[in-house]
Length: 258
Image (cartoon, rainbow, N blue to C red):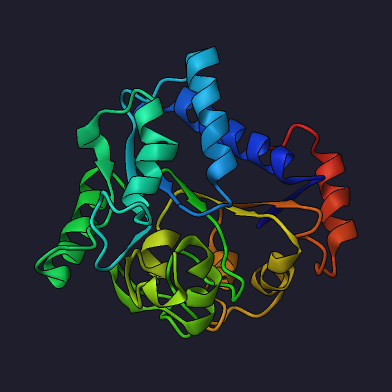
């Protein structure tokens, strides 16, 4: 893992968007793995700005989103499909047919999951995967105890995840209990991975993922096994790291690193 510590959330987003842009400049038809939630929101805003102000081109890009709530239609305001269209897709020049988001309302989830995995393979695999991290250390909706070799599938959400996401719904009981999600094994096949975290409430999960043992109880810890994972953290999210001085020493020795 490469650890990049920034002073605040805005700096995290600028660094992350720059990494995406670098990928697209070197490979205009890159395949991006995208995340939802509050953490990547600033990254998407910066990518939109770069598209409008600097001509960052998405016309050949293919995207695969990590997950979606089961039972929510694409036009539901809390669906991840709605989130992606409102906060990124409708503001850039990506072809609609190049966008892939798991379906929360398919008639056959098992078949859909196989199809989703096949689509990723047919597009040559994911070049750069963007990830957030849950307060319990999960990536995508791979809750604690998920198999580290798991593939796209239906997952029952943990109580902590439901409580964390309740703020987005009118009532806590409106939060779906199930989600369709890429598996840990699927994520680990990405060529490059970028894990983003902001805020003191993510500090314990970040420390467990980076410095703790590799365990299914913290699925983000599986990223320790990946050769090209960049963790971009604000200072609060990095607050529980025991080796923070070492990470910053390395960062200062590599001023050109993303």
